Length: 408
Image 1 (cartoon, rainbow, N blue to C red):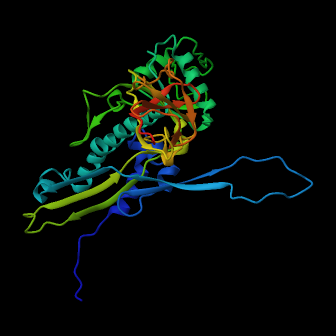
Image 2 (image 1 turned 180 degrees about the vertical axis):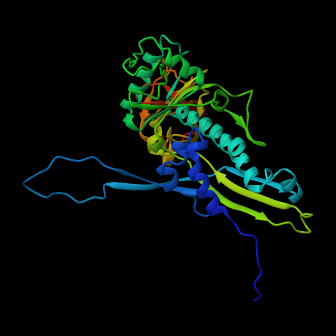
Image 3 (image 1 turned 135 degrees about the vertical axis):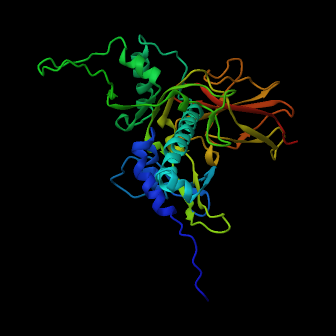
C-alpha cells in the first residue's frame, strides 16, 4: 500500500503544553492541573469512569472464638460521567498577513492569544459555575450580605461547616471576587504586623491566605452561576447570580481536558493558499460523589430547589407501594455521604418544599436509607413527597412528589 502523508496531529503535545500553562493563565489552575484531573481521564469518546469504594465499620474482637461467616465488607461502584463541553476553533492565516504584520499574525501568536483571552477564561467561567452548582446541590450555600463588619464571623462559620463535614482545611482554596477581597482586607478585627526596622516606607496589605486557606481573586464577571456558551462565553443575564466567595477542596473535583485534534494544514489550492489551523477538545468539571461536602459558596441570592423524580408502583399487597426516587445526590439509589433522604406519604396534596429551609411542619417525615421506598397501608391517589436534606444543617436541598399507586 502506498504511503500517504497526512497532517500531523499535535493534540498530545498541545495538551501537555497547555497543562503547563494553566497555573499562569487560569485563576482555577490548581483545579485544572490537580492530581484528580490527571488521574481520571476519558476512555473512549467523551465518557469517563470514576471508581469508588465503600467499606463497613470495625467490630469488637472476640478473643475466645471464631464464629459466624467471613463476609466481603466492601463494595465498589463506578461513577459514570460524560464530558459535555465539546468545543472547536479554527482560523485561516494568509502568508501575506504574516509577512506584512512583521510576523505578528503567526499561527503560534494567534493560538496563544486565543488561549489567553478566550479558551482559558471560558473554562474558568464554566469552572466557577459548576463549583457553585455542586455547593448548591449539597446545601453548602449562604446568602448573607458580606460586610467589613461581618465577613470574619461568616468566614469562621464557613470553615466550621466544612470542618464538621470532614473536609481537610489544609486543602481548601478560597476563590473570591475583588469586592469580597476588599471587604476582607478592611475587615474589622484583622490584625497586621508592619516591620519598622527596614527603613522601607511601604505597607503590604495583601491577604494571601487566612487561617491556612489560600485566597485567589477572580474577576466578578467570571464568578457567576449561569453562562451562555454559544460562541465563546457570556453571562446569562436572565439566570445568573453573583458568586461572592467559593471554598473548594480541589481533591473533591475532577476537571479533565481531552484534546481530540490540534493540527495545522500548509497552504493548498483547496485553502486558496492559506494556512488552516483547527482544534477540537472536550472538557468538563465533575464532583466526586463521595466528596460533595468539599464545596461552599456565598451567593447573591438563594438557589432554586433541586429536583427529585418519584415513581410509584403498586406493591404485591393491598395498600402497598414501591416508590423509586432518583436525581442528583442519590447515585445508585443511596444518598451520598452528608445527605439524608426523607419522605412523607399519605398526604392529600404534595408538601411544599423550599431550598435552604427545614422540613415543613404539619407533615410526618420518615428517613429512607435508600430508594426504592417500600410503603404499606397507603391509599391510591394520595401524595408522597421526598426530600434530600443536608445532614449537618437540616436544610432541604432537593425534593419532589408524586401520587401513590397501590396494590389491591
